[in-house]
Image 1 (cartoon, rainbow, N blue to C red):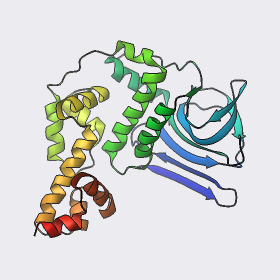
Image 2 (image 1 turned 180 degrees about the vertical axis):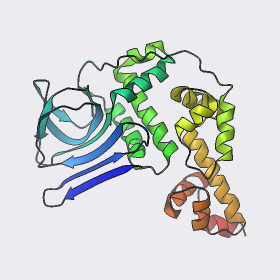
Image 3 (image 1 turned 90 degrees about the vertical axis):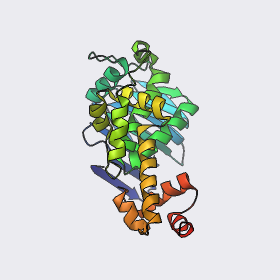
Image 4 (image 1 turned 135 degrees about the vertical axis):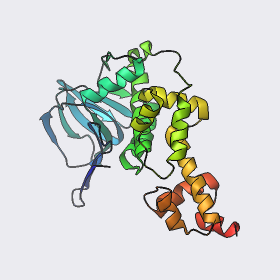
Length: 284
């Protein structure tokens, strides 16, 4: 991840983490817990899409007051003026993504499989959609924290697709009913040949000659997995081979392209069902 800013004031109990997870895209993620924070009237140049995860946010937006509670999905267009603070003593927790208009246009072109971008309209700003908010939180956590570029790329597309599908479905009305599958084999071969690399979704799109959403959907149809999940399994397979030949877990993690041993161990246990050390012991 390119940039990261985190600040915490234990006295005020306010905490915020801001990151720029996509190397080439104008996208910023933020997760925060605000108690004393009070925002003056302001607007963003980007689309702001997020959730209130806990507590209550008392906010004025476009001249109207709202008590925004947990389970609410927030969708602001560029230029929407808003301000406010805590709506209860414990404050509020939020997760947000700030997305440039350029990235929104790229997403809608991918969805429509067209060089003409579509307008993304959400109708209103606050939507009480607990199920969608839960889905958003899952993908946001991956986008905000994962050390693997492909995981962040796929999470971003899934996050934006989930919100758009529920709150701006007109964007999907022009989506083609069938995506080309025949070229996705090139992307599968590419991941198999680059197990130890931090592959991005843009790389796979170039290899397959497909758009981002086409690549993800075709990959799922052919393999049953997202590109990230497929690549992760290949990495764990490589680790298993190394462990069986006596390579230490830390070295195996490095050679398979994991950020560190704990990162590898977490995924290893989730896929194999035991720790790398236990696996190595059982393989002797």
